[in-house]
Image (cartoon, rainbow over the protein chains, first blue to last red):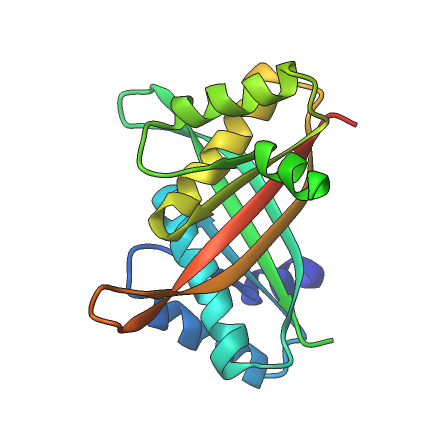
Length: 96
Length: 96
């Protein structure tokens, strides 16, 4: 569905790289014409997702506001078939 | 001011202890009659604050909802007088 594709394009997944890698990705999305960009992370990368959002709106896209912040719990299954829970965050920045 | 004292009592600061320490503190606040409890953290402890909120509402206080999530940036000055920025989060859980 076109709607879903658009949503995925506007989502940046934060992992273990330095925060500036993700800042650049978010800024690029905004410069490409996106009004909303979602920053997602799980587990320990959650604090890096918050860093990313804060650096973007304080230094690079000063008209961006925090539209929404959602936290949740995801169930992961490892190679041995055991499941464990991990926290997640989704921060949506908007220039609208 | 009485208003501020009440707010401080209902705030749990998350640091480097295991998440369950903070979960216990939050649950104790709710059991003591608080309707709202704020969970605050800075830097790498942010992901632990999200874990704390998720464990509380999924396992211990099932009628608690996420009332508000605020992220921000705080400026810290180290012993040498140099300042650095650190991200912060405040998650407010409510049973109202």
